[in-house]
Image (cartoon, rainbow, N blue to C red; front, side, top):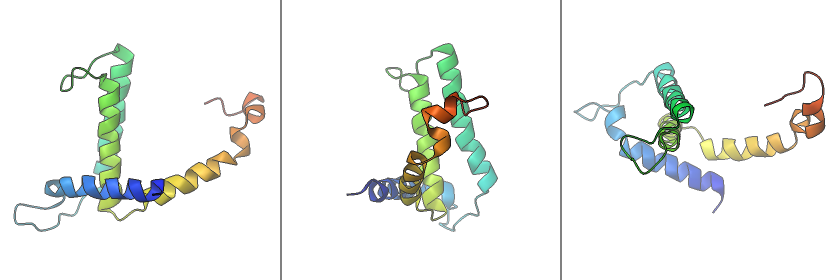
Length: 119
């Protein structure tokens, strides 16, 4: 199976498991605010940064680094968002990886030039 199919299947599974966030108690689909959902993704990445900054272990999964768990949370939110709005996240990821492999500004030579992309 291709990575895009697997990623889209994972997104759909996560979205199915998060049904309660997308529907009210009667089962009516809720209108989700894209900005709010994107900020929730951002908050998980910020929590990962805090875990790295302080070298913390996670409080809910204490055998794992906080950053690792928060990145998993961010991935869950990203895939849920993608499935919730019908995005082909797997296809987009594959195409973007292919595109990035050919980008001149990603070459070592270009990065080492003055004002080159350092990170």
